[in-house]
Image 1 (cartoon, each protein chain N blue to C red):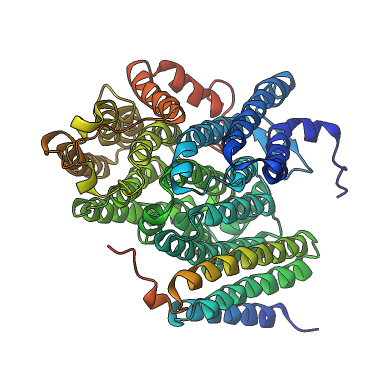
Image 2: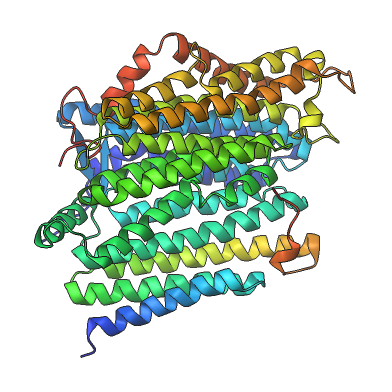
Length: 510
Length: 100
């Protein structure tokens, strides 16, 4: 088989990625000559880069996709599949990065660590995420994963002289590298079983092997599945591979903790769905029990652990693990051979609403950062309502949305997942998930209780910077708007899954 | 010619050594070396499979894994230095500020 050389169309399709890389490199260079007072310009440059990248998606990638009339375009000799699923995630990553940057500017000034590398690293990690979402070849997916992960290791440890930040970076680095190693071993076994690094080739190879083994997977196939899945579950922080998440979130700069909990997680999900649905599709009967176990373990352990937390960042970390548990149920929904489309739709919708509500919650915590107060302990927010009424109301909004209260966006994430479970007859799992969702309300309301019911110790009003206002405003608007008028967003999710035309996009058919 | 199984056993052994080292060792540098050992086990298995299938893509993956390992080492050692500066220790048990 001869491979055609890369042509211009490939570069045009991946223009959003290329532009973002150029801007990141530009920030690194410009930062050298930027005086200390003008460091916020780096944030502006990064935002401009994100705007250009978004423009490139709208006017180049999406247009090329529409003109081709197909559900996806292959680029770089079949290693990249730019389809609507990939574009959906690209938009999501860019939105999350933009809000995180808005929330970061003032925070970094207070920490006195406002270096340009911070924004460059955020852009680099978004480049990695885009490669993960668009990757069809495990080589590209692995490179994207590592580009994202290595950038994030540095970002977590960005407060160099802070002991907690160092420690978080170290733990995240060690466990992240460990999980990447396990993941790579799984990929090597899949390669050994099929002789392919392309996900479609892997799926065909596994299909043949399953057929020749009378539908029974051999031991090597099971080990390959387990190691690959372990790597993937590590990245989305599901129990029992979740230990890094609370530590990394607590020690990381708050703005980065927010970024990690939404963008990095969404990227890991994009990769997981691609690999599991396309590459490991033939092994569905094997991975479903595994995911049921992991999902129940995540919901149970995370909800129990969150009850006793006194640090808000840790609490939100456990809540994010619980959310992963709910989302995994979307993959479980379906028959033994076919995944439920509603489940996948629920996961994508969940990731969308989760991006805004969780970034908002972390943003409020970041806005509490003062010279001497970190602002992430529950005691720090006691009586917050009397010091910062706007932030308090916004926090309540985000917390209610995280708990899944109907008029807010968070409800629709859970709604589709539970719906897909009921449709495919998983009544027990659905009721369990609903019970845990009610459970979650307790610890979210515990935060609200501290904010509204306690007496404030220090009654000075808290200032709110412009970047923070913009970031929180966007997050709050999206949380409310998606909740009240979800239809365009549901349609976008349907569009991304190609439900209007063919369902091949996310590997929903085999 | 050495059969494929021997390579796979060796790669599995290297990988298992890496995992064991990661879980048992307490020194950060040693833990880091264990991760490199795991990645080298992965590399060996990729090369062996590439030879078995007469396909180059496995060998290409190895190059990328090496690049990733180098980048990870660069960032990792920088983080380890930062940890050492604030704590004067390389024992993971004493890096314990963040807890349940």
